[in-house]
Image (tube, rainbow, N blue to C red):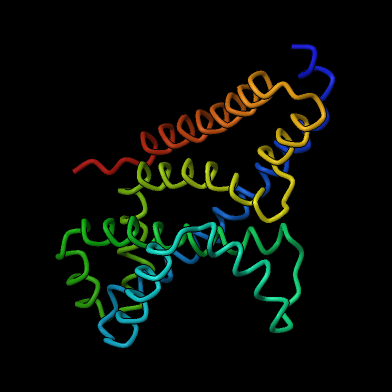
Length: 214
């Protein structure tokens, strides 16, 4: 255990970067997911096709491939950004595809009569979606969104492959210096487990608070 106490600073810094990367990625993913889900249920065929293309493209190419393409490919076309920023955007867009499917399932779970009532009141599609459908849809998919949050925590580890010094990269650096992989990576795993447990507990509390009684 001495190896862990000697490197608490490195683990703490890596954990902080992981938390920041997770929160920024989740915020971006939720925004992208809501927009894409709205496109997928839109009455406009072009928007539905674009939303479907986004989801199918992002979900069927591994996140690591997207990270490598963004980090090494964007500078080739003159787009310059820091490693952390690039990783956060790529993870957000990738997780946004899964968020979109979760939100769309919530939209489909809202009774059809809610949309019909909104239209009867003279609301446009966008207004009914924003004021009537989405608030109910999001409340029904808290648990799936929580699962995606946990998935996002795990996926931030892939940012280590492109140079972001988050928790996995920090653990690897400590291991290169100390050559104690069992203690070091067990500690990293426990920290990921703690983050996932926090996300799960938060999701459970939100689900109980926002549950819709039918």
